[in-house]
Image (cartoon, rainbow over all chains, first blue to last red):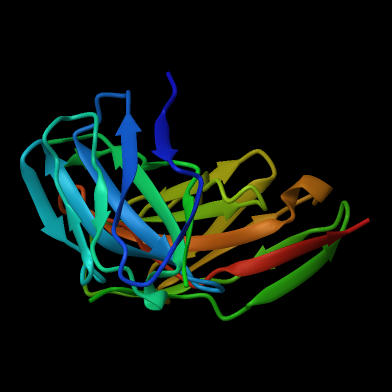
Length: 115
Length: 115
């Protein structure tokens, strides 16, 4: 298993540009998440998904969009990039059944700089 | 909303010694999970230890153990026989027990290990 993979690892964007951060998992997890980590801070939730076709906002969703057309993939779209979106982005996944849930597995992160 | 507080931005420990990292949290729920994650310079988020709130026994994983004080809403991590490879950012995280809700992270503690 590759686990959770993210591409790209690094990216520099100009203000106003758009891009999609890719995330894929091969563990058949139903839940997937996007977090951002600003310097000196913990991770904050952007969006999450409980299954294909279902997404929900987290703590800091403004400026982002997501879609979940398959169980494996959960891309994060940045429209009109702003310097405030400079951060490290982590994708994670987990499996839940009923009221029991398992650990979240994290990808290696994408470092994004907007200038 | 739940919050997680790590009051020690930085800690240091001599190799082979023991260090304790502090974490407090605020919640009105009775069913929840607590986690410690390690983030080395590679940025990968690695699960160190997990504690279920309904368990009175403190979790242990090799050299890592927790002191879970439910009434005080405290969840400290003890690292025994510290090794150079333990140097990293450590994040305390909370998750509600109802469903597979996302993690709420503290701001982290940077641990340095001195040879």
